[in-house]
Amino acid sequence: MRKYILNAMHAHAVAEYPKEACGLLLAIGRKQQYFPCRNTATEPSEEFRIDPEDYAAAEDVGEVIGIFHSHPDATSRPSPRDLAMCEATVLPWHILSWPEADLFAPSTRPATRRC
Image (cartoon, rainbow, N blue to C red):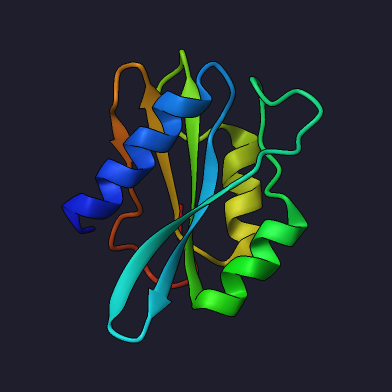
């Protein structure tokens, strides 16, 4: 992943702390872009829900190729819910712990496993 995307994810996590930041990784032609989204979860410090309007707006900009969220005051390790939702979306998930700034990124596992 490009440094400018990591920097954008990091800045978003900082801005949203202590809530979970969430956003989408987009492919626009041969370039990638981070698209920050609003977290509309009932308990945004414990979970995330990408605002549907933000998701639709991102799809207007480019192809969604990944999902990002932060784990405030927790490790970057995916929770059981993260793993289940990741499998359901069939997209790679990137998780940033904050304030530790450790990044969980998808491995090179087969396409059926993205988390």
